[in-house]
Image: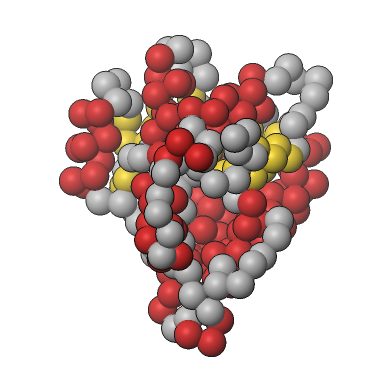
Length: 229
């Protein structure tokens, strides 16, 4: 049985990953932004444990964890939470830039830093669920794409730094996936949303688990997942 810490387990890809891991008997630690959300996650994923920490305020994660019990053993950290606000660079306020970069980039970096001792001990795995926007930036996706390009750089640097310690690092780049975030994106784009056109969260979860379950003699560094329809 492996132990995983997951962000973004409340919906979409994170929920699908958490469900798959729970069903096969793995131990889950789910990050929640507040105590109420933690209770909801424990009720939804029976047997899972929770940590409270607000990704929108990464500077306080170390303080928050200092007041909670962390997992002693940890086989993977799965960074799946994210936020998006579309808009032209000329109309995007500093508040949106700060929040997007905090949740999508700085918090994953800080969370990884805080949990590296456990990951090194277990020769564990860090998975960053990125986005197609982390490979190619388009108009009105500036702040989100910048955060995801940064996340790609974080993963690449971490992989080289921790290779000798046996820590594996994988980035998954899903295309448009049928999640609540995708519904929000369509609303911002002024487009009709049809979930059947896009990747099912469970398909991205399969990619994540494939990386986790790969034998120790190999490492999947980058996985691109695109809609098949």
